[in-house]
Length: 172
Image (cartoon, rainbow, N blue to C red; front, side, top):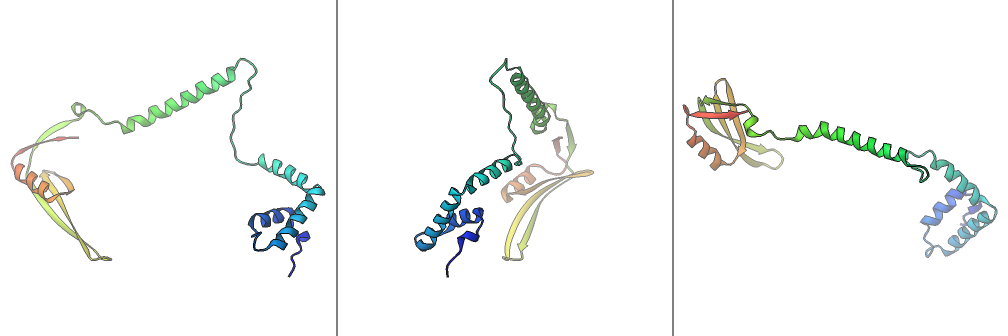
């Protein structure tokens, strides 16, 4: 079966040329190259280059170009405005990531009502794997403060050192 490349569009011919296995189909490749060369001689390539240039204008590209002529005032104003906008954005974002100094945080002292080290086992139904978690719950009426997923040793050590009736300082 012979392929009639004369019925292909120029785009299709170029696509076939990029994807054809020239070593496996040498006759087809030669006919394809001959058809492309014929169309190049007929001027079809100039038309396609003009069409591609028109499409470039439609792309969503953003370029800022400054002329090398003149005093450069526009360029300087743009750079100054750009820096000013970036500084304003940073001034709004950075405070959200700042950590307050401990002396600026409110501290209050309260008496511990209850303290317990709570063990929780969770079974993963897919793998039947059992995971053990230890949570420390400190009750100071009317609130309960928790340290979740800590090691068993740390949980028991804190529970021993902080007994019910002792004073605890809390910062918030």
